[in-house]
Length: 256
Ligand code: NAI
Ligand code: BGC
Image 1: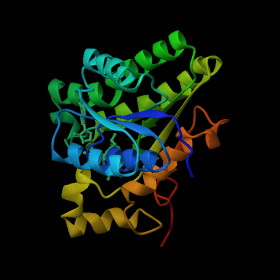
Image 2 (image 1 turned 90 degrees about the vertical axis):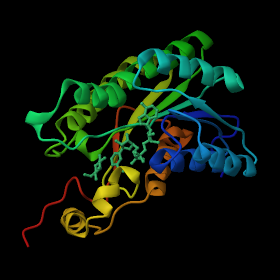
Image 3 (image 1 turned 90 degrees about the horizontal axis):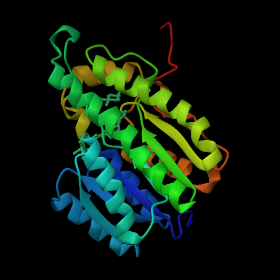
Image 4 (image 1 turned 135 degrees about the vertical axis):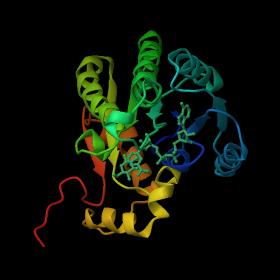
């Protein structure tokens, strides 16, 4: 199914994990892809080869999306690459495991600048482009179940994802007259490098699985499938929502 014929998609933080799966999924449905990460490496090269083998175009643009000037430049460079930009997937994100009382300002800024500030100004640059070019656009933000539920020892992370929830709710209304849709995808526990220490610790993993009705971690491809839906015209009447991809984690409750 070529839902993204003649569409150009930028996915931030896309050389591994969920971002890489989104890049491959959108390419498999016809999109040309702008990959992003802090620097070019063999993973970027491998993805470019895979996407090119699908008959799609792919380019990597290095940018640190936690710096607003860099993210604005990234959007401009992405538009310049293939002449336009249709889909922005704000996937890059970071987390820090700390007791609340030990979090430093530097660690707080690291999380908030990547997971919120960069996304805010990246969307703003994309919206200005869409307005100027009189084009419609689609934004999908990689949020988390922790835009909704707590995650002790990850206070800054939860604050960033909670803010992303409200940013999306707010922008959906403000951007609808411009024909720009915006939605969040909220993954639960997904097997990616961000969960390396969890996956290497059977006891901790078992505790996490107790919270998941489907009793398994999700795959990056499970998340990419929902991103692809939201980015496509199949979701033409969907804006301001969060789609949970969590094996039932968020609304889980059982007594025995
Ligand atoms: P990951 O750590 O495997 O991948 C994140 C990617 O973003 C990495 O390639 C990293 O280099 C890149 N990145 C980080 N900061 C960046 C920056 N300043 N500039 C450019 N690139 C940067 O993590 P994963 O799991 O693929 O996470 C992707 C998104 O999904 C994140 O926003 C995360 O919060 C979210 N998420 C992940 C879940 C999981 O269980 N894996 C669950 C819920 C949400
Ligand atoms: C975090 C993961 C965690 C998952 C479920 C995500 O937002 O990045 O580390 O496993 O939520 O708690």
